[in-house]
Length: 213
Image (cartoon, rainbow, N blue to C red; front, side):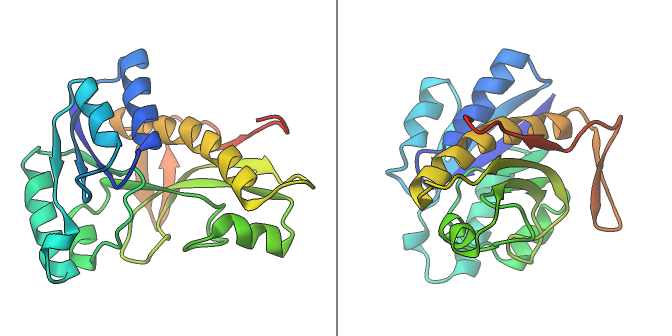
């Protein structure tokens, strides 16, 4: 039985998708805690309603990222995590924090990495005229929005798309691929060799949506 700790900053819709998938599919795991850097994060109420322990480490209480990350690490480690999941956690983590959870921390980014790391990915994708856009689940490394790619999901970019419309369709993709990637980790199917994440036994590490998705 693996312990999963999920970090959020807001609603945590990906956290909800993971919690719901774990319960429906009966993974050999439990959500040990949902932790937020914001006391008003809406996802905390959802987690509590599902009987998941919650905690807050408010980044505004700390003078710098290093001291915040040190306290966050102490709180996270109190739940003995096998996996740390970033579910819309809107903080840049220090290299020391990332290294502590190397190989056992996942993130989802709203683009088809390595394209469009950073912010405003949907507007940038539209400005570049790409024909497909999507989301990437990857292991977290000290390089922001880089790391071994576990799973990617893509949607076609439509002529009438706005950044908000594209964001909503990509978010639906995230809700499909993130739980799948977490389950692969829980089932000990993921490994990283020479910077590449592989799945055993193999199956497609991508997902394509229809135009209506």
